[in-house]
Length: 70
Image (cartoon, rainbow, N blue to C red; front, side, top):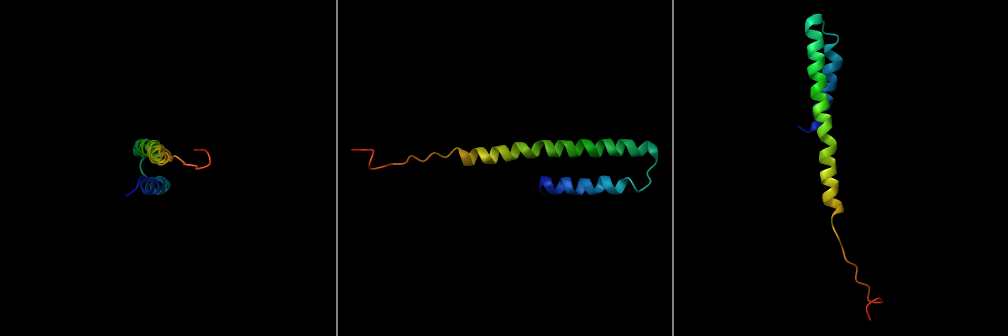
């Protein structure tokens, strides 16, 4: 599963568990743990994107123009 899919699942979990009626002693720790997991996953997504774009931008092509070389 990709990290974006995990974020979607955890987002649905946060929306649903608020209505499940957990005791207040469980409610805050569950919300805290869910939030920390979401932060950890979302923090790693931009780093992967930068690595992929850096590989694509690092290619160098030398153009040979016959008019400049005489």
